[in-house]
Image (cartoon, rainbow, N blue to C red; front, side, top):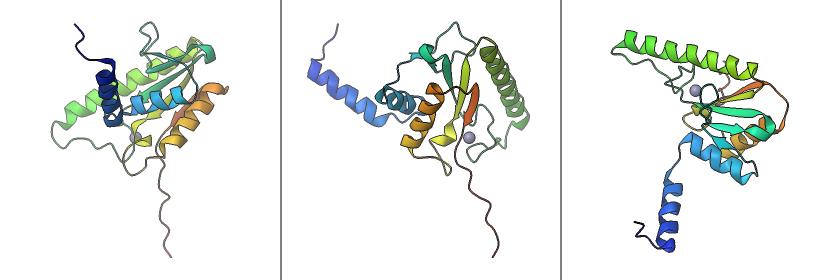
Length: 157
Ligand SMILES: [Zn+2]
């Protein structure tokens, strides 16, 4: 039974929204606000992409930098059980590659968005990430990757 009044429910929802900064949710909210409509985690597609844009034949996969072994400031192999993590993360990466190939073969355009776009020293402004994702969805590129900004290598004077 639903015991919340609509006003209470709205209040709860706004609290949830204000608190939730997970990359997928930030992305979903931003792209929705930008006028794009999508489906979530379509189970019949390889890899259950996080966001599916049927109208544009595009999908977005959001990758956590640790679990997917991104070469970036957010990833560090744990000092303990190193072999276990190495094997685990390598397995994840191999699966990621297969998923992308399967999606491309079925005519989907694939954008991978790495977590370091949103978090850590190389993060980008959220509006920029949303804009770049939107351009991909509306565009014609078959495949693209969006990651945090790399800092330029400092040059010695
Ligand atoms: Zn990363």
